Length: 247
Image (cartoon, rainbow, N blue to C red):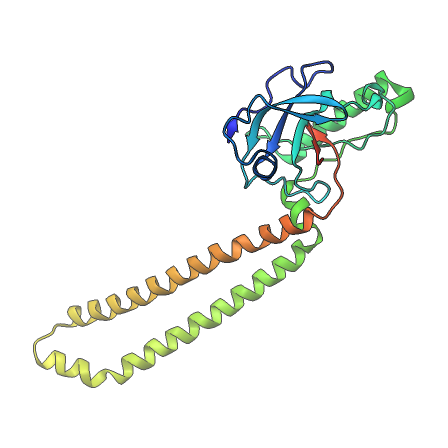
């Protein structure tokens, strides 16, 4: 990352306009220049000072937010409705749970907060709540049961493969009975024969495990590639603590 993230206080209304830009926008607009920090971009007729460049691999992976080009603190949003409590702006927040706090505890805390706001501002906040959705559920959506079924099917296929490999190993050992008899006649002990068979089995298992790990790493990247392509085509909304813009 080049530069810095937003500092404390820059999300307040009336603060000095600052912005962070994506790596793609940095290369397209500024040619990847290292002196981009301190330059300005115009949003809604207002100059925003660039304070940082977001890494190219950054992606919120949210269905409601596509990858933007420019990020600004939400307090600098020029929409006059931002200061009106009764305005329904449809703001989405992205947050990280504190270590040791479960999603159920966070949901209960948000219910207490929204309940307190409804009591303090009954005219505008009554009946308004907040929904907490884990990132995994947001990304997977309704396909999680299907993925669990596929996981079970893959596990069953793996079990069948293990049984087949065991049968092949047993058949191969049976076919080598004459070889083992000759080795025994030449002085090879039972322990040495067992070590030879174990060595062959371990080498076969290591080769299979290495191929499995490489295949897993490749397949693990495919869903995220699909998510990035899919989410970029979706409409964009503001998010907290920064709102996202695409000029």
